[in-house]
Length: 381
Ligand code: GLU
Image (tube, rainbow, N blue to C red):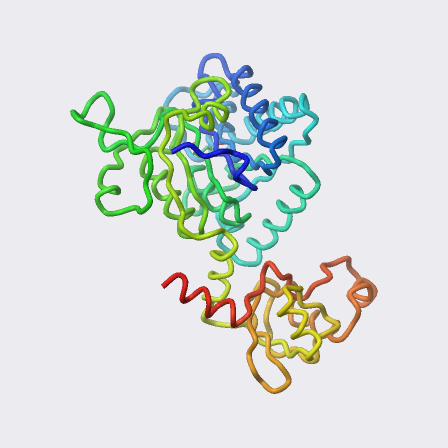
């Protein structure tokens, strides 16, 4: 299967350490420059691009002269602190050649798993995209401890891709796809071109394809595929060994495509409408109800009452004065702040709350109307 990159609007590209860093020679600058030229190609075709880049620990361990063995946690934390600076500078320079601003975002597991922090991280990243920057994302390995870390950027890449509702996640590593066995070792091993469902049989085929530099073998790649596909993001595993790896991929190079069935937006809204415990409710007037059914966000001006003690990022019910529930959504304010802005115009929020904030109480991207939810339940059944 060959997909044209112009059919994607938002692409997350995960770059494995082994592609970017040579243990002896350090950063592979020619490769990085070719990757950034490819990023430029995607941007010029109208795609937004986010990079999830490994390589901090590999670069830092060389810089600090750490021995070539499995590092202790504190050694990898120190290596990451040193390597991340070099990595960020390298991206900043290489993307700067094409007049793009690189923006470093370091995440920990909690930033993607806790709802409030998730929303916060997502808003920062979307703002960067709106401003035309290229986010360069990595795990914040310097503070991540062994119990609370991703440890691999395959799954982090998948969580980031679903967080920003990307339509494609590309995993670039030193292997050109998903194989039924170990290539060159198991007889009759073949590479899959396309996988539409991760069955138990596929899972059983995931051997350990990790290299000495990277933690991401096939097991984490399949985990990433599951995360991505469940949220409507397609994924592709492709080799990044040659220069211009994205161009090669879209020119029809070897790869395994994991095709998602749903679109990212419906998947995210499905997640919102699937929330079991709602944090409270917001009572709206008729004008607001009409605006919502026309696809608008919920503004404080249309709110009559706020009930419950929810926090920013909780899912709350949206009800009419007659008590009919019209939908639900992720709320942008804590209940305390929401109370204060009930009925206000959006431009009054700043003077009331004393901070610049979002104009919508619930943004339309974070809102599911009952009619949509019912429709989605049927179409996904
Ligand atoms: N976050 C790690 C680093 O930057 C890499 C994790 C991985 O190899 O997947 O070195």
